[in-house]
Image (cartoon, rainbow, N blue to C red; front, side, top):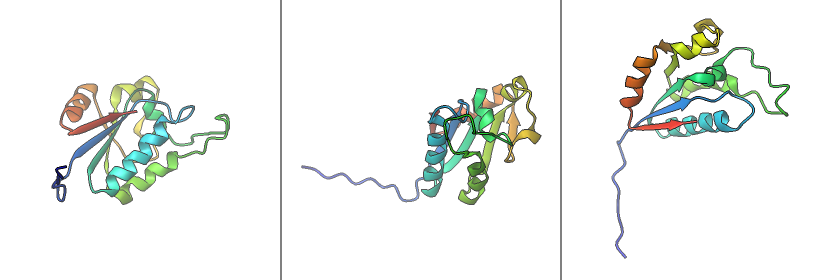
Length: 130
């Protein structure tokens, strides 16, 4: 049986995690956040984009009392900077449709129009949507 060796040292991929779901009620948002942390720990270039109801994931003052005991993990987004995850994007149209502003978020983000978000997504090596 032949053995294969892959040269991976020094190879950096650009990952974008596209967050579309509300933070609580399903496990999607938490699982994406955990995957982001793992990817960043392996020195990959990681960006996060929040669109649709995903903008609620980084909203200040999330109350998880009515979510069947789900722990509030939104504050974990503040730790991303320690993992060198500094590219956080919010789609302007999603934010505005939900009556939110940049001041409503627990982390610093770049607000971009949908047309620019499309270009950001296209520039990635890997896009994971959750």
